[in-house]
Amino acid sequence: MPNSPPTHDQQSAGGDESSDGSHETGSLEAVAPSLAPTIRKTGFWVAIVLPFLYLPVLANGLSSSRVTTIFLVLLGINLIALYIGHAHRR
Image (tube, rainbow, N blue to C red; front, side, top):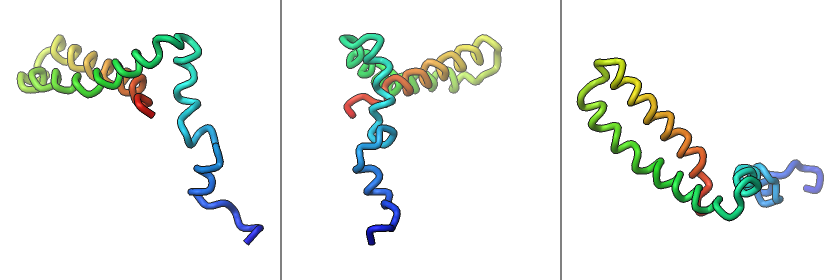
């Protein structure tokens, strides 16, 4: 079948930059090459541990604007940590 289009497995094995995640890790390495592994590791672990801080906030409820702001800030930090740390150990 020489004229058939490549399968998904063949496309992934073909070295396509978008399939191996190398384009996702390049920008941090370009900015801070010596610190990139440490930053990614920290982001990874912050993304794992940070949701435990949600528990006391949510247990008390989001009754005031201050508590709601704290929750939204924690959520934003968690999303940033997820983005930074998602390529840890890839």
